[in-house]
Image (tube, rainbow, N blue to C red; front, side, top):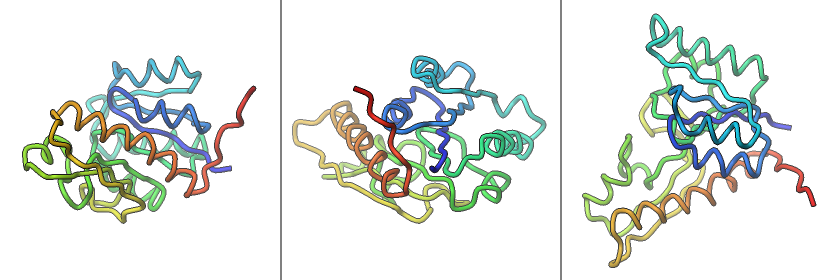
Length: 187
């Protein structure tokens, strides 16, 4: 069985969707006050949090993350709103084993503000992408994508809501495709 860890920096809604369907070994946040940590506690998922500023440099920070991953024998790291660029220390230790969800149809609108950037550009559709993480920003090999149309009646809030709804469907689908075993259903 593949063991997964989820990394998130904030709210953790994608983490919650994943954790409700799949066993998650742990969640990691780069913010000690992130709401994802409360979600993890409520779901009984182990959580860890430490911040880059607590380390001498980014390599030392990522070495601590690699140690956590190794301790838990993680097979796949799922980035879900993790707002740090993954650097060489973590990439080299887990090459081909880190995936990310991005709220745009890559290569359109990479970076931290995919939804807002698509909205401001006035596109008729955007989407959601899950891809492998490489040394670039949202440039890794695409695993799966879905389009989300921008409706005439949309506000940025309704557009964002529909993109998130697409994320909540796509991430579990991709995890199943990658061989992650779903939780056993209890009656």
